[in-house]
Length: 171
Image (tube, rainbow, N blue to C red; front, top):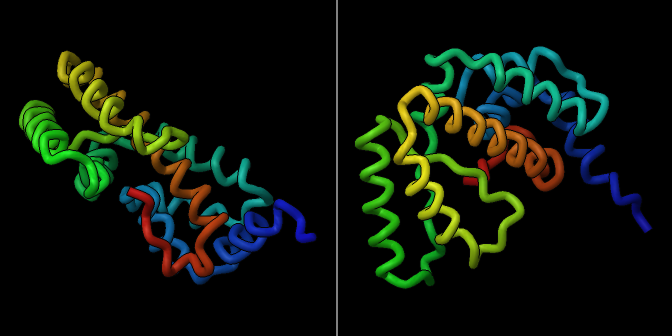
């Protein structure tokens, strides 16, 4: 029986040994800040997933406002499964529009670990609560959610994708 850690080891090995451009492209799919992706690519090789995630966290905490804006500009507002009721889609579109109008960027939230049936409630509750934030506070929350998304995407990248340059972001 294969070792439970083989997929991570293989995926991490591919990321560690990918040409710089391929590694950067795969990392940009996890977080669209060029500075973040270049920094992670430059610090390869990573001995394990924990080291990669720690480096990603550190790079995320160092994002400038311009880096954060660059990353947020590439994000898409989280949506619902097509099978969700039309009224839910309508409510979510309206909530996203109000958020984007207020803060100037898409609403980001990490839903990693939640069941799809919980997504709508988390999305709407998150937008409702965060709409009351001041711009500076919301910027910090958006940066934290972006960091959490990048961590989840990195874990997905090194465990599920056969090649770093064909990575598709989990959005």
